[in-house]
Length: 153
Image (cartoon, rainbow, N blue to C red; front, side, top):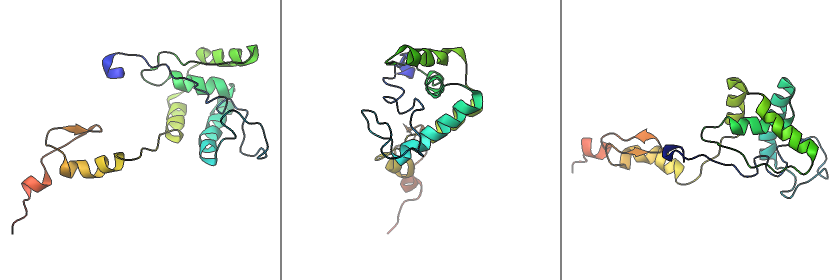
């Protein structure tokens, strides 16, 4: 989208409330739930640093999550869904501040997607098997190992 000059409008950037601050790992398993259910342990690995950043800068967790989304390249406008006035005001508070580069980096690191197949194949095998002078997943492919070091029988 960015390379084509298009903006991105993330849908449900608070993950149906999971990134609003109402979920804590320490809450009992029977605590509040959303349509998605209680966050998983892996999701809490993202939620807890988000809460920590919100506490450091004294802002609502939902506002910090939305400020992070707004700081991402290419994002034109997140599509929010507040159920009441309080939630709407917390969401709009994201427009009143900017996260520091350090906070953005921390949240980027914990929310980094885990890429599956074919990423690992591309990452490790493309340099050996790719066509010279092409780019795969942002990595420029040089001359083929097999062409520069032919197997001789």
